[in-house]
Image 1: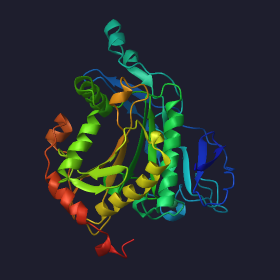
Image 2 (image 1 turned 90 degrees about the vertical axis):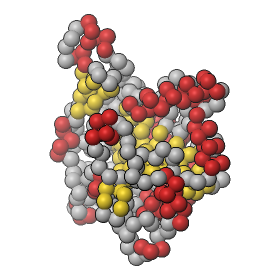
Image 3 (image 1 turned 90 degrees about the horizontal axis):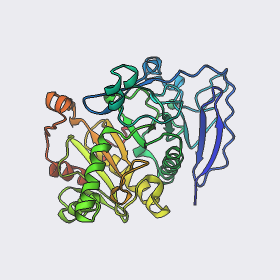
Image 4 (image 1 turned 30 degrees about the vertical axis):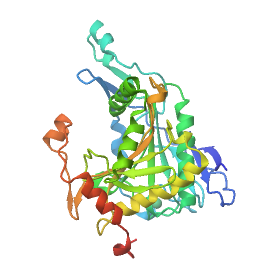
Length: 378
Ligand SMILES: [Zn+2]
């Protein structure tokens, strides 16, 4: 079974894709009759010589929409006299190019390490590149209120199919080195729109975190002949102390060295490089276990918990495909009903985390957490 897709172009030239649930009637084609506004010109990448990392600078994003009320939400369906970003009266799952992208819309190669250019001619231009890439918005539902945790398995499956489609298609575009699928939930962590949605960044470089984890995975594979995540998975499953949930094809656990007050990794039992490599049975299974993990996180406190859900997929041109293993990391800074962890000197400046709670304790709480005590909240 594959999710049906309809494609069109918004008035200003941005791509829009409508993904339909298995039992959904055929969606009308999205026809955008708004006047075409000029698209913002792309931002800039600046190279940090000290760390070897690209930093994206996108000053045009200052004017983006901030916490609109439902009647002004750009992610709700269009209604007569009120066109939104999604020019249909109803939809299941929609993906479209971000109107205020940090990367793109232009695509192209970016030098991996311009240190040599700088050594030859110490200039600003040697350390600057156009912010190539692509930023997309993934809308989970036409309903303004709710969250990924509320999605039924059929809808969650459609979202997973949309992520898989975007991972494959964006990885094939010029200059794309990594496809990052993620969701930020909660005003506390800077979310500017409450309508349930996630995002995709297609980077023209390998993200700094992935540079580190990929190198370690490659080294482990070379030294042991085994993929590193396979060993981590075996370690967590045999210990069981930090396990939250286990299904046929996935394990959800709090990692041994958790950095955040709430941190859960969801790892497929089979080695895959990206969401697009998951088969039908694995996608259906993920569509059940992922919302269940989120519901348990929401069950810890009396109000919804802010979180970041980040898909760690293999880089497009990774050094050793046999070393990579895609997984999801959900993290939250919430450490009590009314307390958030803020990144202080050691974390922010040195990247050295100091945890507040033990991984075993968090896992024990998540194993028994339910939404029973907060029924009626939603
Ligand atoms: Zn909305």
